[in-house]
Length: 544
Image (cartoon, rainbow, N blue to C red; front, side):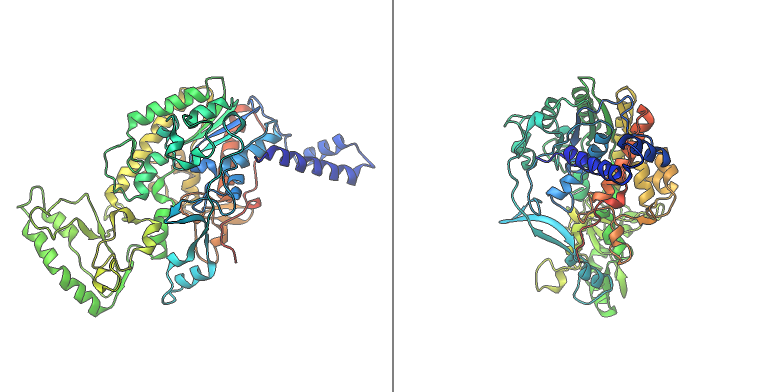
């Protein structure tokens, strides 16, 4: 059990004692503190019209503190709710306890008999890969430590404050017995029939944060849309439909605020711009990820000649199959860097006419928007590798298409953008009808830090506020340091605010979010909760 409030009080008392010792000859302790606040023009911490007696946080891995691909103690201590709770404590907030279910390098899943732990970036390997050293791949730079199994929490139910559960969708929060299918919740559930929401409500929060909904689309995205477009409540790799999402959100907010609690509701981030989907193309300089010499390119083209001719032969014969699609699907390599061959299930199924004409094409740039097909971080270890060891013609992206789960095609990106924009519309509408709810739009922060232009923000269907914040300059300047997304260059890696898994922020990223929340609360409730300096928190996990 970790009590951040006790730690915070010890720090505050230590500061006051030090000041009093230095200046006791000329003033009392109260005078010293008052004079220091006045001289620095800082309002004393105040909760304003907020009741901060007990803060309860509800959500998924972003709330739990999972980062670097695992849930580990340092990540939990630097989660956004933990950082926020420490600031709320200065304004009268109470203790904040999260489940003590992880140890060491944490738990990031199981591969065979091995427990996966926290990931880190081997800087030497990363720089060698970026420099093009033969035999060194970027995928080798992101390494995984040995993890440890989750343990049963010493505190459950009403004794906890943080009810963040990795992998949980918004629609999972109220599922009774959810711990049976989710080991993270199973380790701190109050009973075998408990639900996340039920346990959170039992904690009796007077103030809460709810950040959920990203997993209702993220599972589809990170799996490359391979599960298809039809919603299946039992399959977290499908996109939740709007009606189900709305009902789940309304039920969750009703339950959390039933006792009059005030809350912050955060919306869904623009999923397609997170480092998980951008790192491969950024490092590769775009989608041209397959380098070939002239003889190899010629041999590969000879191998695809029958495929290309087969496409032309079916124009006007296969239903709804046009010459435009045939040309879109043709595969041609040249000397130099080439886009890889990928799987695209949205293409017309021609295998009934010719089994060799599977749904594949080369990665593309949309000629209208400039958008490209995207590759997940998982593709780093796939593209260019042999699907059959020792068989040169089985290279993924050349002789064999990159698997569907490693690629987010242009059409699949539209599905993702449409989904989170729909969810955010529902979230905004629901917040507007509830006097006790403050909406925090994360879009402006994402637009700013990722250097989006206003047009790009609009294309991603972000809010007007996010479009206004989109200045086209990568990063956010804090204390003279330009904080950026996950970068692997020697100059910028330590200024990254995303963790090594490409999905979750690192502590500095969480601190940026905390300031967004605090600013919203101070503005609405007349509070003076102090913000944090993101530079005071650990950066990316790249030991050297």
